[in-house]
Length: 127
Image (tube, rainbow, N blue to C red; front, side):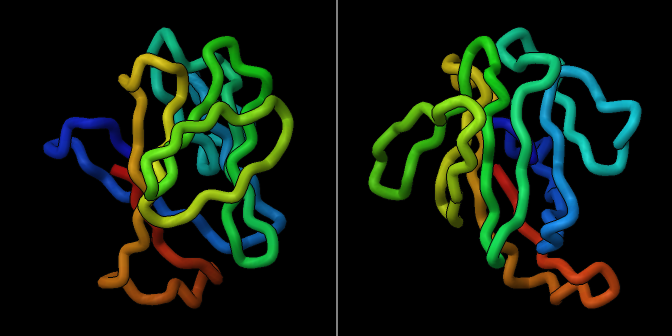
């Protein structure tokens, strides 16, 4: 994931593995460094959200963060995620951590990268 600066655009692999959880916060999770993303920004809580996979879909859950987690669907509607309730996201949705849009990401499926058969996953990118 990366924020609005396209020069810093970097993909992140979201593995379609129902046993794996990706943690998102302002500090890295030392107990799970390979499955955590950190954004050292004031609007991102230390433990902000998680991304999980269920039934081949990806779900974002806000963990009661101070500034909230938001997403905009492909029709431009903006929603605040309710705390501790997983919400499925789709390609072209925009995800925001906090409400000031400094940590805003666009989800897209990268069709140019092959299925990762060794890890059982696909590649998504947020921009």
